[in-house]
Image 1 (tube, rainbow, N blue to C red):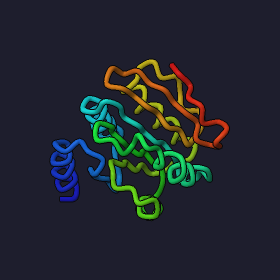
Image 2 (cartoon, rainbow, N blue to C red):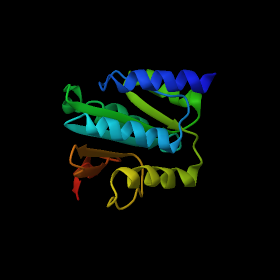
Image 3 (cartoon, rainbow, N blue to C red):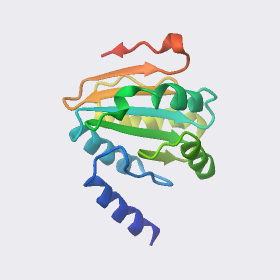
Image 4 (tube, rainbow, N blue to C red):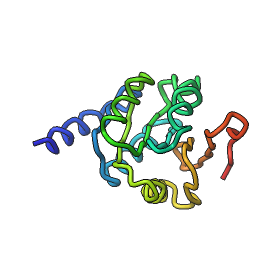
Length: 162
């Protein structure tokens, strides 16, 4: 029953590609890939934040650097958060940072989180090198061109163009 509800909710949200879409309590890689593909297809540019519960810098980076980006307020911009954590931490985090956009939660498996993030990004950006650290922010345009930033410290937030 829960899967049917999530499927119906995600189907409804796909017709509204805006920053006020939905978040799921637990996600599969394929669901995340499908929604991310739709965001990229229907947006001028899509910004993606990837973080994890075990990452001390992730919450401050999400709140202070990623969500404060003025570009994220534009209607033609897609925004998605991919986060590795338990459900209670994830729900509390989204509430504390007042994020209401598209978000996917995966159960954190510590060392395997980067592998899951890489699997997702390789399906979207075939020439993406690899997630070596978290948090990370990516900017992807509708043609598949991308830039990525480390959000660990303000001094390391310069883009890495690929």
